[in-house]
Length: 136
Image 1 (spheres, one colour):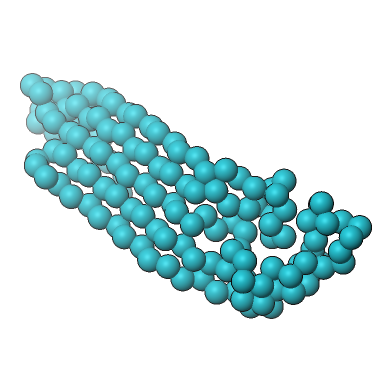
Image 2 (cartoon, one colour):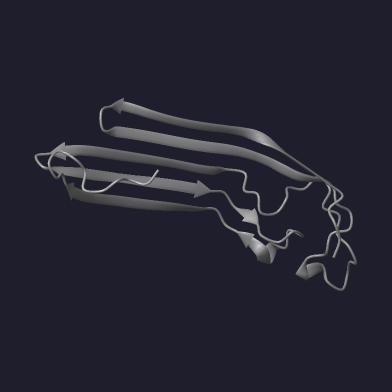
């Protein structure tokens, strides 16, 4: 076990939200993450290096647990039809691959993946008001 000598993290982030017309909300967030070990000369060797190396030098290599591209987006729509308020929406996210182990062991690599979700509901409007108070 050893400590990382020096690590540097930088990048750029964008977060946008738009309401093109009443009831529709669009959102998008993207990050370009550039995190790497500046100095890490005494990392634990990977499983494949065990027996042939005492330490591994990860200086200049990307850090573990820090995907280069985490991206999310969402679409939400709400509309009152008669005495019912209808909600609908969906979201999508993507995360590029990354190492889950500090020593960048190839057996600990998580491939990039995408997730998708949909939601819908209808809530009756009682006397022109919602029958609940939304959490804030």
